[in-house]
Image 1: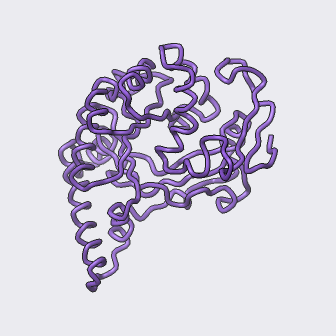
Image 2: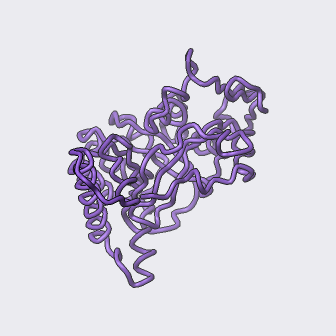
Length: 292
């Protein structure tokens, strides 16, 4: 939990330039899903020479993970967690520890400094949580734990979320779905479908759409989006899923996600409809400056 994405960003990675040239002005990025608790995400603009120039929010959310990834990584090393039960237990154990640490500090008691608990305990002061979960059972485990500890949580990937759309709606659970383009590279993805967007939308579930770069490169954001529309997702809802809804689910909608007085002037002007496979940005404006 003490790891920070901002300390691992390479501003001169070509992916930022490619994303910007494709009309992507803001990204949220963070640790992967090998660890049950991975550290904090950040929000960045895709233009700048240093992280300091690019950063929108230094620590946006705490990343956590369930399912095959931590199970496989640690199982291969013959250590825990090698089962779904163990991943859930480890997550709860550290949340219990962090809650006790948080409460002692809040009550003014002397607490020996612990870097892990210091970072993780912020989830009890409102730091959002992103939990990696593909399968329906893992999504329900994430919801169960988030309720137990009153966490502000979005489910990341939520590949099978559309299969339990009514349950997501009942629990007012927000999800960030994807990547949906590409092959079903592991068992967890067997139910992956571009129809998921329409199902979630029809059920009234709040969702955004991710690429999980570099699984699907950021520059192909709109290609993936067009395929959701092809499978029935309303065009406007699709565009919202990578603009204002994405900003809301990442808690940066006060800065980006729509054109509004007081927000960052990030505007893209396209040479044709943005969901046309042949479209290109004519002009990319970031923070009020023409950058492409």
